[in-house]
Image (tube, rainbow, N blue to C red):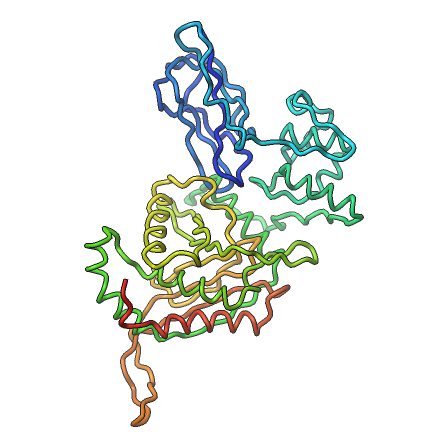
Length: 426
C-alpha cells in the first residue's frame, strides 16, 4: 500500500495559515475523490479541504484548534498500489511559504518542524514557525506576549514577528496591547433564561469590534442626499439589464461606484495607521458588509473597485453576496480591504454609526431610501416636491481623519449619487 500526503492547500496570496476546526473523516474512514476530509478557518472564512484521491485515512497530523501553515502535511491517506503517488501535495514553487533569512540566524527546515524550546503561554498559541524564529532571535515569552497579533484570535503570525524584529533593530518599541475585553459586571441567568454560547465567528467579530473602538477615536458625519435621479434610472434599466446580463442590478454597485470615485478625489481616506506612520494605499479595495443567515457578519472585498465599470461591479457584487450566503467565499476574498461600505437600509434603517473595520480608517453606511417632501429651487422659485431621499453616515478615525476630510468625503459621495445621469447607457 502506498501513502498519500494531504497538505493544507494555498488559499490566497495573503493567507499563510489556517486553524483546523473539525475533522470530518477519522482514521480508518474510507475516502472517495472530492470527499471533504476536514474543515478549516482563516479569520472569518470557514472552508472545506477535499481529498484529491480515493483511499483510507490512516493518520491526522494536526488536532482540532491547532494551526497549520500552507503546504504543511495535515493527513496521511493510504491508497491502492505500491507506487508512491505524486502529491497535490507538491505545492508549486510560487505558492510555497518561504521563510526569509533572518539577519544573524539561519532557519533550517528541520528547525521549523522541531519542537522549539520556547513554550506557549497559557492564553496564547504560537505556531512552530513563530516559535522557531523567536527562539533563534532569543525572544522571550514575555517579549512575544507583547507583540500585537494580526492572525486568527489575535495570534502572532510570521509577518507580525518579522515586523517586530525589524522595528527592534531600528530601536523602536511595541507596547503590550491592552486586553481586548474589558471587565464586565456579573450577569445572573434565571431559570427561564437561555444561555447561548458564541460560535467561533461571533467571538472573532466581538473581539474585532471591541478592538476597533479601543484603537480608534470614532467620529461620525451625516449627509442627506436626494437620489431621485438614480432611483428612476435604475427603475428604467433594471428589466433590460437583467434580460441582457442575466443579473439583477441593485443599488449596491451604484453606491460602490460613487464611493470609489470619491476615494480617488480624497485619497487620504484610503489609509491605515501604523504607530505614528500613515500608510497611503494605492489600491481601492472596497469591502461590503454582508449579513449571513446565521446572524453573523462577513465582509467580502472587491479588489481594485475603481477599475470596474458598472456591469463589472454588478457582477462582482452579486457573485460575492451569493457565495457569502452559501459559505463559499475563499479566504483571500475577505482580505486586504482598504474601505468598507454597509447598507443598513436593507433592514429599513434610516441611518447608523458603524464601527470602523480595522486596520482601515473609515466606513460608510447608507440608510433606506424613502419618499419625502423636499424643497426644490427652480427658476420660478422654490417648490415642494416628493423626492427619493436617503441618509449617508461616515464613521472615521479621528487620529488621522479630521472633520473637514471626513465631512467633505461623505458629501462628495452624496454629490455623485445626486448628480446621477438619467440618460446613462449601460
